[in-house]
Length: 380
Image (cartoon, rainbow, N blue to C red; front, side, top):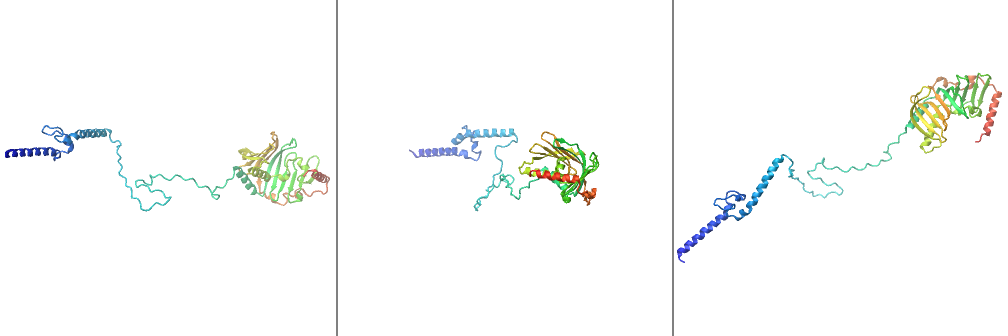
């Protein structure tokens, strides 16, 4: 080959290499980024020009721009609604301590958990009450009522009260009678006075610490005068006209009987019946509000005691048989308490009130003989 042909051939190779290099370098020129390769370049070539990579990724980039534009329009249409992307700042987790945890200690909280937001410990069961911590058992209302009445009565040394009495002796219901009851509590002394009615002027005196504990009876008036008598408190001549001995007269026996019944009831012993508080009810001669206490005996008798709310003392006692028949009723007026006359030496002395008793009277001997005979034949 001639030298001129070699020159022409070499020059052609240089031009071809130059054109190929420009085609490969055109996507990296300082114009638009690679996504701009989809734009049509001057020269009539395809979207990517002579760059095969741009021709391959161009459609995908165009689809990405369309999806981004669609998502942006949806976000603008939704307004200020909550974003689907978490907006919280990243949580700073402190580095682990080199000190190993103490066995049994609670785990450490993350730094973004505040004490107020952390769940508290589960409530623990209350500690059991110890014997010293246990509340003292309070008294029942009935115990309180009886305790108040007992305290009031114990504050008195003497008292005098009008009493209306009606009793069933045997099968006969006696007529009611009005009696004035005078009491010295310590040592026990009783005086009964009939100031009105068919037995007006009669008196009965008993002093536990005088005259051998006998009961002295003075009867005045009537068609046939009867001399005074001294009889044992349990004499059949006395009990044939009364349901109770004179030693049971007064408020002490009433309160003691209720207290005893309540004590046994609380121990589960129903031998004396059951005691209950029936609320407040008007009763007594003055029809005043009272605590009504009911006792039902094993035989079916019903006893009702009314304690005045004001004085704390009994104003009425009533007993009915199981068939409803009245057994006895005692009504008490307002008591006169701590009277000086009842504290005097002659208040419960029959000789000072009635004069000396005749010695060896016929009625006296008959009464004592009858009492002795009845005592000897009574089974013990």
